[in-house]
Length: 214
Ligand SMILES: O=C(O)c1ccccc1NCC(=O)[C@H](O)[C@H](O)COP(=O)(O)O
Image 1 (cartoon, rainbow, N blue to C red):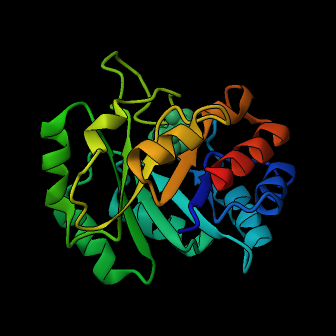
Image 2: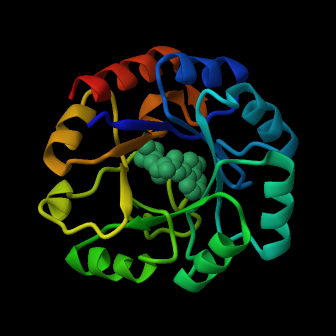
């Protein structure tokens, strides 16, 4: 099966184009002000326009309220809404029923217990995205930290919904990650940067090549 590839936290036309040309199936736009990858709604809408018909646009929000979510969807018109905070299964389900787009929920995997609890989202989301857990320190971002988790947690797991692997993926480790977990979709952000929030087009290309060659 061909692995799908999401490049997250893109914020310039050049890096968006590089991701699409390298064969990314999904591009991620982070609308979350504390992030170095935050893009305004207007910039996100412009970037989204560049990929229409070529790759799916994923809008990433963190614990956004209903009004903020509705406004962001209205302006950006993404294909996918990725929820990367502490959104409940019920809230995901409400959005999935009301909105004509895919709902993805990110879950940090610390141990087998956190993987088991992620099952609460089955039936409420279109995809679970397994990431490293958020660092415990004050002010830490809930994602995009470039930290990998223990992939053996996913070995032989009985997935009951589509899923994706994220967390510390780079051109150097993505093939091994795919082989060890069987991930159908891989997602990378900070491992493709020369500085926080600054994507490197060569790293984007190398990542896509390595993922496809796995
Ligand atoms: O990228 C951010 O700054 C960010 C902020 C808040 C929530 C999520 C965020 N990013 C999510 C991602 O980029 C990925 O889906 C995932 O966390 C993998 O990131 P990385 O470990 O940096 O590859």
